[in-house]
Length: 397
Image 1 (cartoon, one colour):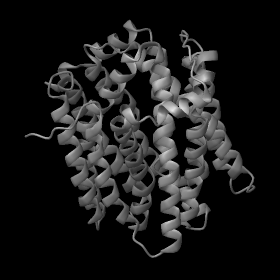
Image 2: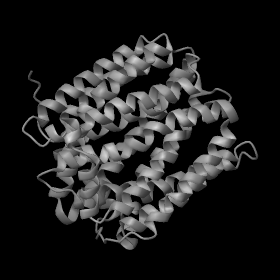
Image 3: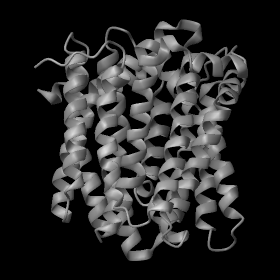
């Protein structure tokens, strides 16, 4: 059944497109990031003396600057090529985590880390999305997206639990050191990868005008909903678990085991997503993702968190594959303007992330006793916004 999409066929798929080196590099990168991404908001929260507003402002500045500068990322990609852009981005990611490691040494590593990760994001995401939109085939794009997500998630199955155990046994300095070593090795395969070339012709002013056109409002709602919901699960969810006194190893285990289940499910979803069931699948996945966020609000124990997050991962997988397939189809349909479409998406998502995080920081500063899990109701509403991807949402069972 699910295993009919076996690893042999998957890696054959990668080799036929001459992107095996690229995806090996991405797998190593995700192994490194998977060890730390769950615990990064907690590290910053502790560094800022358990100030949630300051932690949110840190992330707000990063996303805001990235959103404003996204057109320059498109221009850099066009000048040096997507593969080289991603290669250079890894050095900035390396510098970012090195700066986090050095936070206790000097406060000046805080602004330096912000600057480094902004350049890392600028160089990585426009290039990554453009590359995939170019080489994935129209006939099997849903299946390709499912496989892409599995390839992305497989290294991250073991990394959260590994990162949790490293934290418990040795602390953040050793965790950052391990992440830096693994991240450095991800650079090696890209040194031997073939380069492709893109032509990014949009001006900075043109990119901003195009991003906020009225005719793109439905697609923009979908992008914004997805982008903000990701913020809730990547920043607020770990901080909520920390507030429940869930141990680091338990956090890692929850993340790892839920990823095992969702990765297997995602292969099947990718296959189904290439059929006429895609809109239905997106709507059902969005609805259940919304329900899972409401359930998360009532979590009281570690076991509750495991069950709720597993339901969330399954539901999110059902929505994510058709959502991303719609996105890559729209990008591919743009032809030579695919990179402009992707840059516009990055502007919309990250500017609204800046606004969202800034407002959340203000709310938690004015009302410091507000429970952090209250934001989960917002995530429940945002999840329903996934339905706006691609086509007019129709929910029918």
